[in-house]
Amino acid sequence: MATYAFIHGAGGSAWDWHLVAAALCERGHRTVTVDLPCEDDSVGLAGSADVVADAVVAAVGAPTDLVVVAQSLGGFTAPLVCERLPVDLMVLLAAMTPVPGEAAGDWWANTGHGQVFGDMAEWDEVELFSHDVPVALQEESLLHRRDQSGTPMAEPFPLPAWPDVPTRYLLCRDDRLFPAEWNRRVVQDRLGITPVEIPGSHCAYLSQPTLIADHLHAFWTDLHP
Image 1 (spheres, helix red, strand yellow):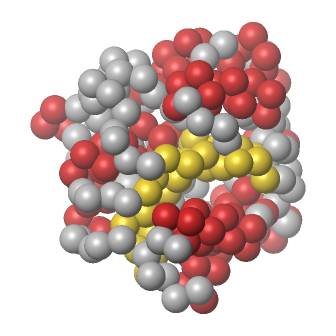
Image 2 (cartoon, rainbow, N blue to C red; image 1 turned 60 degrees about the vertical axis):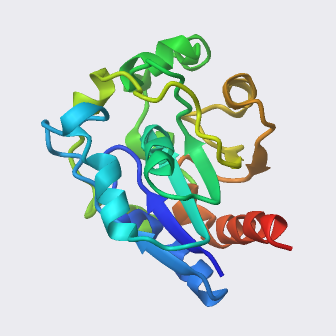
């Protein structure tokens, strides 16, 4: 079976993945979640400040049969982990898709997000991120929210190319932050792959955990029939 290493998004926590991780453990897989140092203004993506990917590497250890799974801003970190560890598969869930030299803060304009989305300030946080998540989970998730430093938003993505690792993308059709029609194009243009589409909001890890675990398991078994 595989080891799944989960990377949360901006201001998130290891808790975000607890339902997906539990569903994978029921299938016999090992899972690793970690609280990234997202509040620390000294932490970036490149050079001596690159401890975000290092935090994932330290938590994972040196397993074989490794799958790295990332959501939202975690799409900037997952490729860096793939440069540090032997990764069999990378899976992006409603994740950002950087190109070399691009800062996360520039990604929005570079992908034309504002042209299809408009002003994020007009949205209520729940309506934007987790409108399909059960109310009890929405309330619990607020207890696990953390501040997000702006440092990683300003630093260029340091890799010269996307890692030579099989990559899958789970696109959430009900994602209001990353509208489906726009994101299909972005994923195709930047990764050259057709995303697998599932129902769910930007926080589908809370609203569709079993379905996500099903796909993660299937992606693995497709590589290891």
